[in-house]
Structure formats: C-alpha cells, structure tokens
Length: 110
Image (cartoon, rainbow, N blue to C red; front, top):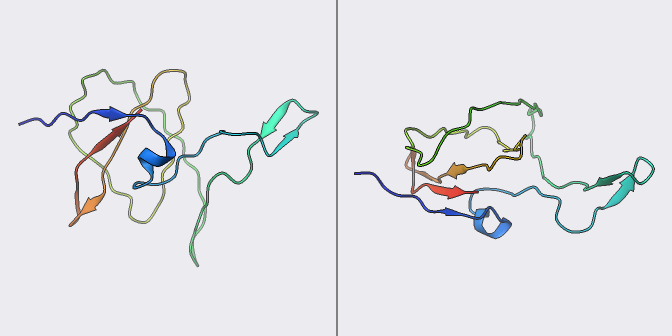
C-alpha cells in the first residue's frame, strides 16, 4: 500500500535532523567586485577527516511530474551531498534517516 508523504518547507529548523540548509539569509558578510556582488562567507562546514579530500560533482536531473512514486533511496555514508537548484523550477528533496541499514520514514521538502 502506498504511503503519502506531505511536503514541508525546506528551512533550517525543519531539515536539522538531516543536515544543514545553506542559504543567503541575513545580510551579506561583505560586498566584493566594486560592490556588485554580495558574499555570504563560510555558510557550510566541510569536514573531510584525516585522509579526506573535497570534490565537487554536478548532476543535471530530469524534471519529474507529481505525484511522484518513490521507488528507491540512495545512501551516502562516507560523503556529503548538497542539492543546488540550477533553474527557477521548484525543487523536491526526499530524505530519510538510517534505521538498521534501511531508510526510516521518508520526509519531503520543497
């Protein structure tokens, strides 16, 4: 039987059990480039561990229509992920905590 997941706004408080929300809230830390660019400094903490390194990959995913049937979830126990919308379309993120190596109750954010 299908379970319906109700979306909730992606805010720092709503998402805190799953990670950080990186945003440009508040005043910029400084203006650069002759005052034409607002810099929001050090908005995410990146812990790479003793032998770790930082790498950045970009993915261009296809738009999906709603209602969405969730068929699988990924795990990234040894890495971090950041979702950065690259268009003005809405963006849906579905996450779940780990429960005995299986996804716990999924939560959806927009």
